[in-house]
Image (cartoon, rainbow, N blue to C red):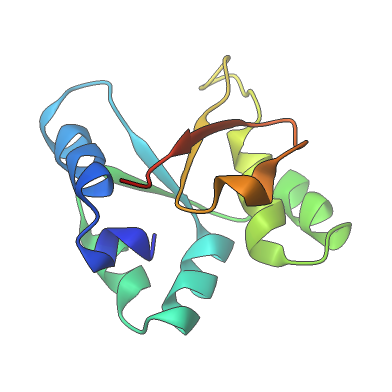
Length: 113
């Protein structure tokens, strides 16, 4: 999320695609929005205002996942990437820190140039 605000070309393309193509979505777990906004104030409001970004609320299963982890953002992000009825294959994590997810049960999209 922070990479999007730093002129990262890959995240800009992802956001553009989510805004222009039907059935193509970017998800923003609310706990990750909070952490991104703490690191760079204004990030959460900006991303939440973009029409192609779907903000994922912290529901009960997400809260239970968060309760077992060190950081809320990582736990909610990992939980949000898992398969659901709406996303049977789960979701990719677009990240500028792919090493953070090594060994985790998630699919990663490295957005580093």
